[in-house]
Length: 589
Image (cartoon, rainbow, N blue to C red):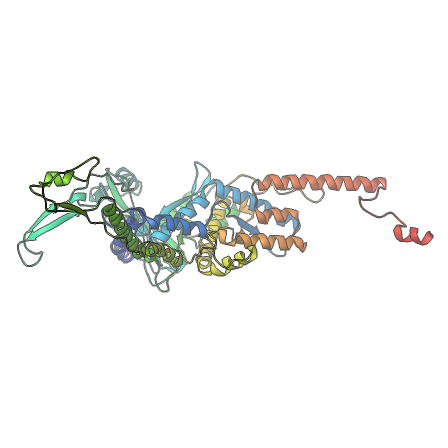
C-alpha cells in the first residue's frame, strides 16, 4: 500500500483501511457469542441442560492435537558447520527450550488451540518483558482482530490488519499528551462496559404475549420469565472509563516493510512507527546496542518489531480455501449437542413419569382434588362404598432404541473429529495383537493428524519470533559442551546464533499422535548406530532428561579415563582375546 504522509490526508486514509479491516467484526462477534455459549453451557439460550458434551469433547480433541509437556524445538546448525558450531547450536537448543517453557509459552499455545476449535481462529501476539526478562505472549480473540482481505488465507500476505482492544481512559490521556495531542482529549469516545450486553438479562428473555396488530410493528405486550438460579457468565465485569484503541499494521510498499499506526477513537492517530523510528535514530535512541545487533534488529525505516516481521501468529487448525478465518470445529458438533439435549430430556421425562406415574381415579364418590393428590404417597389409603371405584396408574413405556440412539450420538461426535475408538485407547472387535492395534490406530488417525500437522507451522513461527526476541534482549551467556580436549567451551549469546539456522518442532513432539512413531524411529536409528546414546535420550525426551545426559557424560568420561589407563599399563580391554588366542593354542596342541 502507498500510505500518504500528508497530515491532512493520512487520517482519512487510515480510517478507510480501518473500516475495511473491521467490516465483518459485528457479524463474526454474533457467531462467536453463540459458539461460546455452546462451548460453556451446551446451548445458546438460557436453557439448563443435563450434560454438555461439547466442552469435554473439544478438550479431548485438543489433547490429541497438542501436548505442552512433550513439545520441544530442535535447533540445527548449517549443514557444513564445524564441530564447535554444532555444539553451540546444541547448547542453544537446550537453553532455548528451557527459556520457552519457563516463560509459559507452550501453555499459551495450548490455550489458543481450545479457542480456535471453538471460534475458528486465535491469535498470539509476541513481545518482551523488561521486568521479567522473558518473552511474553498475549492471547487475542478473533473478534478483536480484523484483516483487509478475508479471501486471502495467510496473515503474512495481508496488506493490512488491525488489533482492536480497550485501554483505560487515563492511559489514553497520557499517550495523547506524550504525542503532543492533549487538545484531542475532549474528543475521546469513552465507554464503561464494552464487554456487556446493552440490555438487562431479563429483557433479553422477554416473552411477547400479544401485539396490537397483525405483526410486531404494533404495541407489544410481554412478560418476563425470570430465572432465580445463578449462572456464571465467565466475563470480566468492567465498570471504569475505557477508550477503544487500534493497532493498525500496514505493509508499506515504499519502505518494503510493515508500518504500525496507533489510533484511538474517534480517529485520533497517536503515533506512526515510521516517524517514531526517525526520531529515535536522530536522538540516538538505539544507543547501547552493538553495531551487529542494530544491523540485525533495528535496520528498518518503519517497522518497530523486526525487519519485515510482525508480532502476530494465527492459530487455525481447520483451514478453508479462500476464507481467512477458517472453520470452527464446534459448528460440526452443535447439531449433535442439540440432538443430545433433546434425547436426554426425553429419557429424563420418561423416567420421571415412570417413577411418579400419572393416575386416573374412576367410580369414587366425592373424591376431592386434595384427596387425589395425597393418594399414592407413603402409607396413604382411601375408602369408598362403590365397588367399581379404582385407581389406575399410567406407566409410560421406554422406547427400546432410545438409549442406543443416544449412544450413537457419541459415536458421531468421535467421527466428526476424525477419531476412532482405537486411538482413544478403547478396545474394539477384531484386534488380534498389539501390533495390529497400533496399525489400526495409525491407519485411522489420518484426519486428526492432518489437523495436528497444521499446528506445526504457527508453533514454529512462535518459536522463531521468541528466538529473535531472546537474541535482541537476552544477555545471559550460554555455555556449550566441553571440547574434545576437555577444555570448557567459550560462552556465547543468542545474538551470535541469529543467521543460517533451522528451527523445527522436534519429531512432531507437539502432538501425542506422533509419539509412538518418534519412539520407533529413535530406536531404529540407535540400532543402526546412526545416533549415539545421548542423541537417543534427546529424541525420547524422558523425565529428568538433563540429569540423564549429565550422568551419561560422566559415565562416558570415566570409561574413557579407565581405557586410557589400561592402554598406558598394557592391560587388554575387558573381553578382548589375548595375543595368540584360541586358534593358535589349538594348533600348538
